[in-house]
Image 1 (cartoon, rainbow, N blue to C red):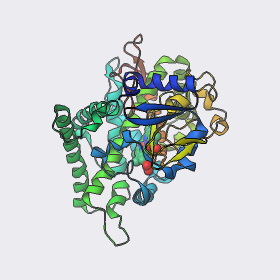
Image 2: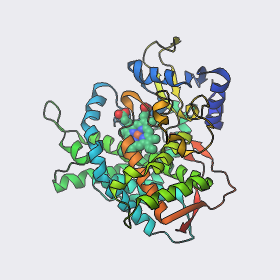
Image 3: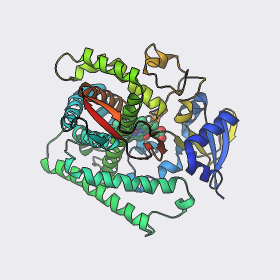
Image 4: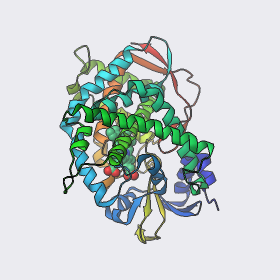
Length: 432
Ligand code: HEM
């Protein structure tokens, strides 16, 4: 009945690493009643994401987020998805991102100004607060400050809910059956809904046309001249609010952990920031010279890809690498495994940002490194996230050095929908 589900629940990262190491680049397993294929080679990933992408839809695990994200960009499919993607793409254009850089730096400065020398803070929570504020300001023109506690609580409940759904046959039980867990989940969704509808309502009330993402969503018209209905607006805003902060906050958390464990990398990052920031504070244009800091982000996402597995479901009988794939099969592309594959990365377990110095990205096979996915459904926020993470790391490193409060304790990864830490990560802050 369960197939490898219990093993996946116990240690998903270990299991997927072992099956690809022991059985090769394409491994058939069973997850509950669903046949699945684990893909461990970039060429095969490319077949699924690009060459034969029309044979697939989003995987079952992602679709379970539907009760929260509805038909937002992450989960919609087909012509509807394409229309929405084209509509939102300009909000993530390089020039637009450059305009958001100052708000990103300001938010980081505000946060770092509130820190005290030698105090201990849970860095994952600090980063969540920071990236939430930034998404609110840059994409929706709003301050989410007052809602932070509510959002934080809701994301914990959502995490528990989706974890229980991810690794068990509980999926057979719909979200609206009134179990205690489901009731907590429904309250969390209602809390987030209230926030999302407030963001939409406030903007509508001001009647101001704005070029940010919310402005684009509100002014969009279809061929019949109709705007988006409230439900669709809610789904898009909810998707961007959640997808736009959680992944980057986790990437930053892992970056600070890795930097605390590598004196060489941290020294080099601090030296770069000192050399680049000639004025007393970072400005948007500095980002072009923060190459090492940018590589710290790239290397962090190699070792700890926040989207640690990318799932698809075959819509029809198809094939991968010449092997038959039956309709209904789940295909798991696993960045966690591919990013640690010695065929593509020397010393794969080592944190070496400098490995990206000499054009490694161009030499790697396409899709050997895919923290943002690939093909049509590649992350719309990849440029936003890379810029944001680089600016925040540099802004914080300019003033603060962070050490693990308990250096002996291992920071364990916890793969749910995104790659979290198993517990909060207390870090001690030292003013530089
Ligand atoms: C380090 C940060 C991030 C990582 C690792 C990440 C990763 C990913 C990945 C792997 C996908 C593709 C999923 C799939 O193919 O099934 C994706 C899609 C998406 N991401 Fe990101 N993401 C990040 C940041 C962001 C940000 C900042 C935003 C928004 C501001 C965002 C919004 C989205 C959306 C809307 C999609 C769906 C795109 C579509 O299907 O058209 N992400 N992300």
